[in-house]
Length: 534
Figure (cartoon, rainbow, N blue to C red):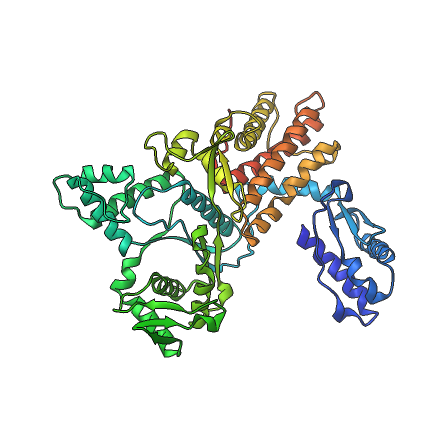
């Protein structure tokens, strides 16, 4: 709807300014949802931007443009358009527009919210990519959920999306894993920097009397990681092993490509990449003295491989410990001829677990870190996914396990799911009363303010999907879910759906069914179930 309004106003302004020979100076029209509900359904500040061009006050300009908009519209799009003294233009949509949105939602059903913004652009999203040296922790779970919801958003907005998990299956950490397990098997002291977690004992017990085979250990840990992610409803199209880059000599090829561009220099026997030429704060080592490649060299080869697989855009969701890698990796891709803006990296922040006001630092079972699997087992998949998606990736997440288990309206996932269950209950009762849920109804009978609010949120669902995708902010969808749930609960307490007024009942049944579709769709987009009874 925002785009439809923008194009409408842009056309009017083009005609208006053409007569003043100012058409080339038209600024971009932006349409926003006002923070204050009484200001209207949408607003624009375009009058403030063109007032100086036409040498009028912003107040007069806003009123003049508002009058032109209303004169051009036949009443099907706008109920009122009002210019304000401070130069804003406030827009109130017609009932026809809102009613049509409810009908469209019912007709589209699971496709409501689906768009073609991406125009089939090929996108590869990489996330989690935890070292295969132990169980996944809650931070990994956060990136798993954020990456998965982003994948779902991209898919329903018209992108061709693949998801990938990068496995660091070679290097010092793998050697330490094997040596740590061997030490536990033999009852010896752990090697310096070795892994001492309880899970090392579990692995050691499985290899007692056998050779401590590193590949089998990796397979065991990866299998457990995959099982945890499967339980969390996170599935990858591909698991990419770092070792394949070495096996296929892709790291050496990437370094040679940079050498061919004059971007490698030698210092103290090591090969350095001139990354400062591309905006990095310092040059970076790609090959150590003796010829061993650095992790950075592997990252370059890996992302070069991604682009060579013909992806138009790469998106990585990384933990906060990768912050320093962003500029250097973008520098390398730019050096190899790929646009920096085609590689996006989201750096997430930490997760802190709480039980009420008390921070949880250790697992009750092992006395060590709380694993993702333990959280899922304690609070369930729905609550785990919802809470991990609920906060912007750019901020720390304080995850209250006790709240997540509560069956009350204070628990946001319960609150939204209960709205869906209540809707389903209403519709079942309507069927028992003899109403045809798919029958025709006159939505012009919907006059209560709570009905209009619900219609507006139904209409805005595709917009919120588009915004969450464009800004890479899956938490916008949990915010939407909670808002429409609140609006529905308020409507429920104000308006009796099935009453003696048959025609009004039909209209309200249509509205409630449209709300059901939207609440279910947003929950499915979040990977959370939409129960029909609770």
